[in-house]
Image (tube, rainbow, N blue to C red; front, side, top):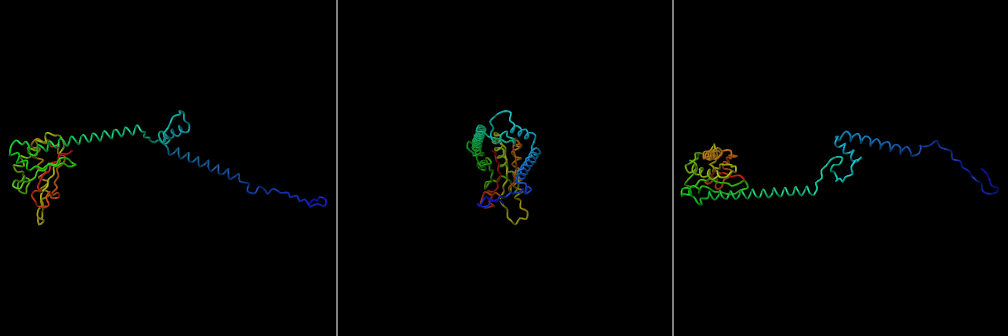
Length: 262
């Protein structure tokens, strides 16, 4: 300790090196750089393993472009993708509009043809009173499926003999008229049979077999009148499951439907 005359003493401190302590914070920065580099390396290895040759080429082109060009997000990018532009969307919209117009035209053509068939089957312009009486068995209606032509029993004139699938003479003549009318159009057909309910006391109800047999009987009659069998797409028996009358045993439920499909 030195003194300066009669003044205050001057104290000089010397700090000795502590051997480096924890070597400062530089090692942390170096370690973080190392870990980051390893993560980047393993990420690169994973990308090379998980991508296809085409995608790898896309990556290379992305990071080292040879041609300057305008790109949309995702389109022709490193991982592929698709972009829809306004022109493409307008083209699709025009196509949808054309499809809609075509569908409307087809529907209008079918309805015009169906009305013509209905006119021929309503008895208007019939050549004879006998034909007019036969066409009283016919009821037509339009549905989403097509033109439904119902061949129904009349109270005093059934279309089948008793509870059988044997056609009466009226049914045979009616099938000839129907085959002639349907032969002038080209649409496909479906046939379904329907019968009235029978008493529940019956052990073996005939409704399923009878409705199916009558539908097939009408199919056979139409084909025997030169209607091509390939036009008939299905023949179905519905038993008494689709009754037309509130009374399930009403004979008016006995009918065969021939559907001119759309």
